[in-house]
Length: 194
Image (cartoon, rainbow, N blue to C red):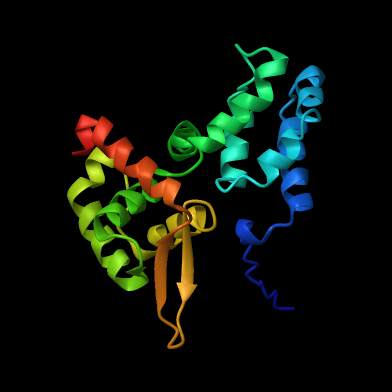
């Protein structure tokens, strides 16, 4: 019997408010957020503000909860801290970038930053191979197309989106503008990346 796999694409921009709230709650609950912090989210329409925030992204929510961001924060200030993070998600993207994706995926993002938004998939692959050849020892990355495909899968629907055109050509886009902003700042702040 041959197994067939189907690709399922989840676009966070199309989540309902209810879906966003469930994702938020699941991340907070399963990362052991203290109950007094959870209770403050139910006041003053904070849940709605978070769920409808233009920078809402499951990766940011995950990063926020994995870092135990309630530490050094009083329960009554917790909702505002989460909204502030969504207002300026640089720190969440930094955590996700450094801790939740591979070196190959990071290298793809460096290459993509140079190539620019709306880059053709095949052009990004060629540019990544050149980057990997030049920096394979420094960043411990692999050059082959399989490593590239794995890295792209890690990044898809969180850091990047892949859009397929009428002719089947694939173009890579930033998942949202805050990813590009983060990456520009990240490279500028790290001397060894210049």
